[in-house]
Image 1 (spheres, helix red, strand yellow):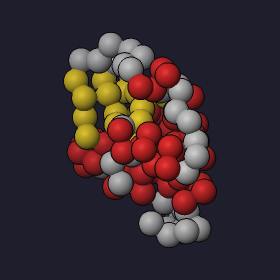
Image 2 (cartoon, helix red, strand yellow):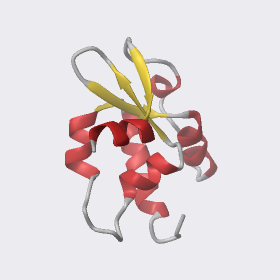
Image 3 (cartoon, one colour):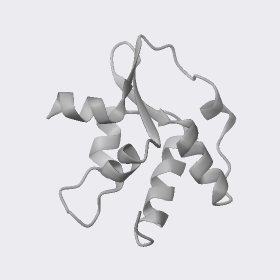
Length: 102
C-alpha cells in the first residue's frame, strides 16, 4: 500500500468504524474511477472491510484486519464495531461481491 493512500484508507476505515454503512452510501462517498484514488478497492484487497446482507440492504463494516489497521495507527474502533450491530443473513467477502456486481 502506498504511503500516499494510507491516510485516506485510514479516514475511510474510521468512517466505517463509527457505524456500519449501507453499501450504496459507501459507493456514493468513496468509489472513484480515478486510478490514483483506489481507496475502496485497496480496503477490499487488504481485507479491511466486509459486506453483509442485512435483509433489505447490504451493509459495509470492518473486519478484524481493518480494526487492527486502525489500532496500529493509534486509532480506536468503537465498541459497536467489535460486535455485530445488525442481524445478517449471509456474509460476503467484499472481493466476491465486487465480482458479482461487475
